[in-house]
Image (cartoon, rainbow over all chains, first blue to last red; front, side, top):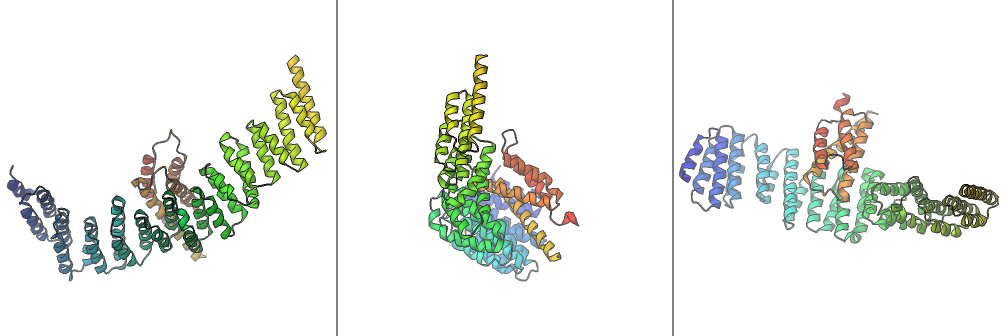
Length: 414
Length: 101
């Protein structure tokens, strides 16, 4: 079948809208194949579109023709879209037509014309939606190519007045800034978000991306100011969530500094540590090491209690970090208990000899001594039991260990 | 008092709207499944759905159960893509306000 015959056969498509679209698609194919018939196809597409009675359908078909013309790389598409602007001046449903044109222009990356369309829309909400479509289009393109012209995204954003469109557009603008390496811009755009959930999401995306790029430290102060502003609008829950983001990327010092600046109670420190314990055991030691001795007491007790419920060798780094962050002997006693439960008696004894409180030291030594008996190490158990100095425990421990030692010997002989 | 109730309802509406868009974002692959942001989004979805259930929006139950599965990541569970597709569908039927009318 010859190309002329194929073009002629399009007449068989009865629906004029579909016919116009078919001609337009053929026009693009022919142009790309360098066939002169492309002109005929595009002319037919526009003529067919103009013959449609329903004005909305007609303008849509003309736009489709313009869109395929643009896709073929023929600049004349602009004239088609410009003509639509003048042809719709008196048309009552102009907003619908203009709004419809925006995605086609965005797909052609003609953001200038897309913005012209958006700015002519009269209905306030429709304008905002159209501008959001432009920003999202730019964001998607930026994901493929980080050198998109950003000024159009900023211009589109400036004109958005209503929520939730403005906040959603701000989130996309943050992403565009991150994709193009404009990190300062990403941070400063965060305060434009007027929805707590989206602000939380975008803030975390900024923190995680800056960490990944190795530049988070350079923006800590700005991020703190943003976090403070956002938490004033959306409450302390948000500040908590934002702080957790820092802790999750292993920026324990920044997370702790945030909590201190916010004058957070010890409970908040404990909650963050618990969340980290649930989500990432590797970053918890970093957070713990950033704590002061006092802060580490509450956190250490809470986390050690959780670890002692189900002690495992994978908790060792956390336990070590707790031990190094606080000199609280009650916490150290829990640490010694962990060592006993994981079979590391030497370290349990070492901890015991650092503990000055006689009662706590005796508790640890008695614990280890009992375990020595269980293991059949009777003489080691007795030696250790004799080290128990607290008078309230000493006779009791020695007596218990000796009885157990006797039971053990009798069992062995019998 | 009515003002307070309205503001609570608005808050839930905004959270539900976020949850619906968040699921679409997770499905689109825009956020890598192994990233901190992905885990955080799943945690966020979990807390929003809990809040909806606590507010008596029982239609959120199916979605809540799916998020619990998503959170667990047990190998015996369906793939996260499938859970997310079901979650999107389940969330589509959840509305704040209409159920209590």
